[in-house]
Image: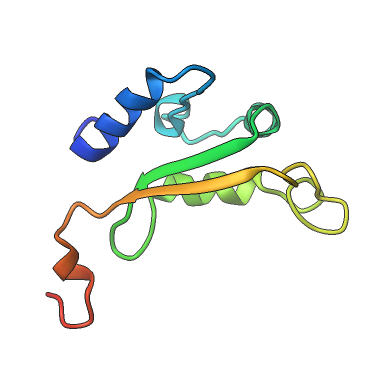
Length: 108
């Protein structure tokens, strides 16, 4: 996030808002050992979840994928008994770091 003007600005603006929690997964888990219980608890405490990340090579950051795999588990987030995220709003804030022309069918 420190190298991205877009994400740095979004984060700065969110920190100014009342009732908003910002949580940087790369800062929280530099060793990539995700505390699943803490992450699930954080999600349960909020009605709106915004995933903010750069989009590159047609994917998101590797730690985000790992976070999704270990935190959003069957029986907790989905499945017949996975109801912990029901009624919550999910928003995705993505930047590309490149011009929109690079993401068009005839882009570079």
